[in-house]
Image 1 (spheres, rainbow, N blue to C red):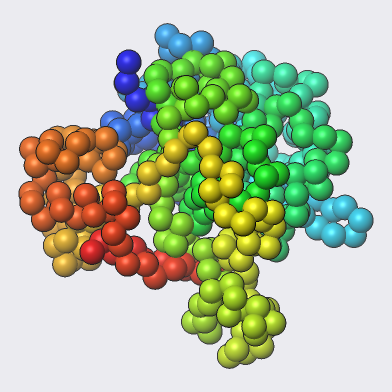
Image 2: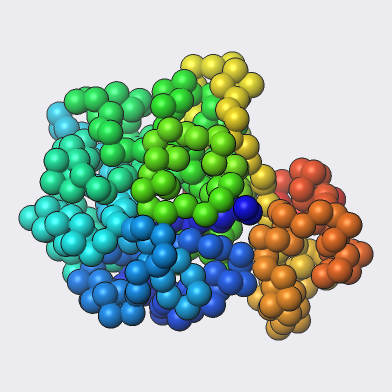
Length: 398
């Protein structure tokens, strides 16, 4: 038995603003370098990508999973639900998963009347997320759903500019049984989400939302042992801490929507300072983009995460290429940093170096300076510069 790492939210070359290198060949190669056992295929609603998946994927030994290049895949993708209720527009991103291509086809036929599936790998649907979930529960009962990057201001179920104040508002007909988890996103982590009792009924998952290969696995979900499609759904439905080990997380301050701010004016503020200013930019007077921390605090009904602490843990990390960049004092785009990164992950995968290997074993693969930096990162010994309004933050090991 051993850990089973899943990254269930990525994109294909058919999604807007996505690298052409996100093809199956590159995905399988980078999954090995990253230490990922299970990847979502991404973009199952797009007809051209789906045709390619049909041709190249083969059934894996585990039920409901597929195989390519030594890596297992689950048929999954993201949709953008844009809809109105009582004169207000909501924008919620939702992840959808199926065990086979027949299920995918029934899902596509159900969604096709509400948007142009060929326009984008992550299509925009003029369909209420509540109506969609209940419809799919009836028509495609094998399919399960995850609410994507739940706190992102512009496109999320709890987004400050796009979403709801509770799950009961989002799903007035009751939480559909096929909605099994909520994705915390890069700008929040489990302790922040534990502050809301509303989320106790959903598993908290983390994924990369990668648009390029290097971003794969920057967040991930780690299970105790290998799972098939149906076991994965069951573990998420039950929040089974015996099989769901922990999540791999960004330091949430690195996410690009953690603090409040206004990118155009270079203004970045903690929630209490933004509130003091009436949530208006002190430079131009326009509304600030309220970040995830502000939104969590507004909706929280607990004094702190300790009141809702769960058995499923988490490990914050900094991407290895950033750690190398900091230790060597060179930019992460520099040739030297990239070459060292590839050399290291070709010997031992990234998540093993960042998370799994004991300290004493790290020295077999990295030098003393990198070992010290990785251990400091694991212990949370970092300096933070929070991200805001679409600008990534910076986390530095100390």
